[in-house]
Length: 257
Length: 383
Image (cartoon, rainbow over all chains, first blue to last red):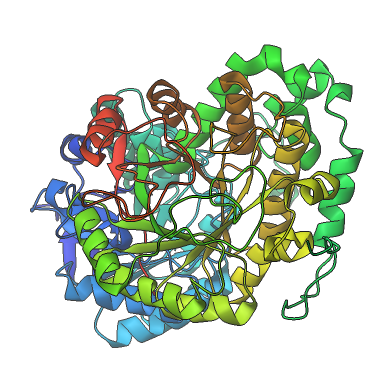
């Protein structure tokens, strides 16, 4: 019997490789999006949780889904650590997506602060998924600090520009022995498929689905694209001829003369 | 009558910070001639994904008026990309209307014979309890500008009470030194809004006749001092209609743009007030800012700085507010009482201006939902 292809994070196995964001949705559409996406992990911002409020985002997320609270709003490692601890106290579990951002224009992550926060939280038993700018040295430090996966950005968050950082994400996939989950910037199912085809372990998307004309349909399209990309990766894509057919007179033919 | 002081000279108790932002903004404002912009510049601005101040100036110009529909499409797209479907809801709470300034257009002006009042500790608590019961999680605390009647200790106490009832505490009070902002940040406030009113120092001088507010540069640098004091975000506004609104909106946008470049972690926000009927306003002659012009300004802010929060106040009517949250505004006030202590019955002090949209929190909430948008009571954590 073939073994099921799972994404393993913090000792837990997930058959879905699609992590859904929640921050930009109309709350009553989250459930349908989760269902159509087949998502088993959903991120949510701790700052949006309002236990006694009129519209608490937690009430709209299906209970079967693993919560991945993020630390958005944190500008330093210390702030993200405080937010992560608050999330755990509020019953959001041990998973945490570290976001440390001190740039309100592009919302680019601060790698050095993210590494610090990762180390502290991993030592406290969190399953840490750091959002980062795809830099190999930083990714190695994150792995060393105890990250459960690495979440490099594909393009500026919310930009829907796809895999602008493709070459650097490829390097992370090749060199880091942790799941590489592409986060931010993925705007089209085709881009998600491409990332999976080159070996990404998963995709995280929010804006692309939340701002689609038909949210459940787009969630479905992403699920299919991610599955297709994964299957292609496992199948081992054939080489692509960049410059036409192979030469008929081999350059190394002289060796046989 | 005491002689008028120089409006460009700091008073002895006013902190001076090292910055050249004022000169930069004033110089750019003077060099901006809205009539000189062309349709080609507007088209070019609308095709860019990242706009510079020159593009912003084109979108604010008369040449952009025929492009309002194109601007609306762009502004809507940019807003949804940045904020998704969310619209934040908050309410202001007026703590006091004592004021030591003499601003000729303002209802709180120290020469106006209005009913003055300030809420005491128990009244603040009662008001906040009543507001929190409406489901709100964000509050904006306002006072008139009286250092004697609303000192930093008084405002700080109100912030501490607010932290018990709300997740987000913003301030719209008189400008203060860095240390004052740091103290209020400690007490739980994280956002500071200061209206510059007009960025024309000459016009400013004729409207602000006395009091701390008369000092133009001290007010200008309030946002920067607030950030230095540890605040997370700052709000900007010109009161449209006091001077050439296009030049003033340009200066306001540039002010926020430069501040965020200098302090990249700072959140910036815009309010978009225009002159509404107020008590004793017959001394000034506001340039007309109709809804079309106001919308143009809001959309130009949005396209220029997609990440800025834009608040639409209850000075505007229901129809305009319902539409502008679809096109660029990201934040809306609800359940507003601009009198002193009006949330649990009769106000004990008079209001600053008349509001045009008197809908309750629930009504605003339901309206947002009916437009397929998601009302959000809090998108913030104090850390």
